[in-house]
Amino acid sequence: MSAPRYAILEDRGVLALTGEDTRAFLQGLVSNDVTRVTPAGAVWAALLTPQGKFMHDFFVAELAGAILLECEKARLADLKRRLGLYKLRAKVALDDRSDAFAVAALFGEGTLAALGIPEEAGAARTFADGVVFADPRLASAGARAIAPRDGLRANATKAGFAEASAADYDRARIALGLPDGSRDLEIEKAILLENGFEELNGIDWNKGCYMGQELTARTKYRGLVRKRLMPVAIEGPAPAPGTPIMAGNEEAGEMRSNRDGLGLALLRLEKIEAARAAGIPLLAGQATLTPRKPAWAKF
Image 1 (cartoon, rainbow, N blue to C red):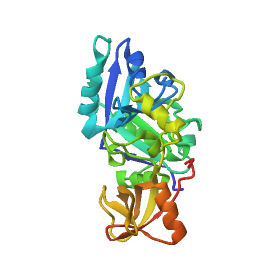
Image 2 (cartoon, helix red, strand yellow; image 1 turned 30 degrees about the vertical axis):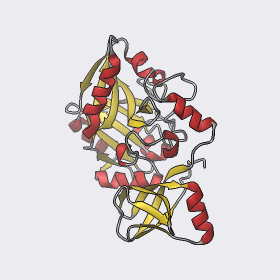
Image 3 (cartoon, rainbow, N blue to C red; image 1 turned 90 degrees about the vertical axis):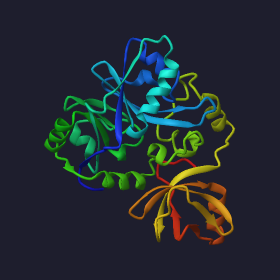
Image 4 (cartoon, rainbow, N blue to C red; image 1 turned 135 degrees about the horizontal axis):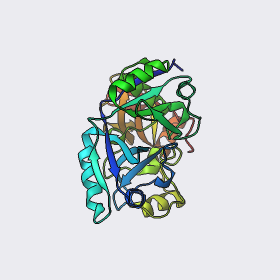
């Protein structure tokens, strides 16, 4: 593990929801339990199609009475539009706060201790006129902060964090096997359970109905997960996202995001096990891939 570092994530935006119906509105739409979001706790959640396929994922935190969705900046307008379609008469306002807030990942050994955050998924506190919280997915992923840019940098430095690049964080993320929104989950096609959402605390099985809940539950209880997203070491030129992964003459999966010789790939479990047993390499374009099951994964 490296010393504590922080990286400003320019590709992340912030959508704020305010109004007396905000929690009830979100609770019926997203995969996690929004009632757990408080000034002391954040969650990670997804918005699905009615058929249970991925549309958006985001971190959900509370600041000064507003619910903040930390999401993909390039797709924020689409998220806002889709939520607006379901708002109807609910007393909820949706505002893009990306100009007011920057988003940072804080990572490396001792991150949560340096921030004074308990090692509990999503544990949160105020920070630099914003909020900082333990990554709800995985303690070893560190923390995330949503705060005004100048104050965020100053307070991170004061807490002992050196500035790193977004690429540094991206490589650490991939090594942990953590998906990054639509870079790793195909819009309107990806299934949450194939991409680690259960182990990474992105689904609450007891919250009741939400959009896409039926397929998600059926996939779990019927044992229908046949593919999984996992890290791969890349030997050779990095394959572009979407490149088929071949085991001999059989397709074994598809590449997703990559960085500096590491990548994520959605792999067919049966195919890669058969390839391993037969000593057949996994090939994507001109590269050879070596998959690694993340320590947190249960498959």
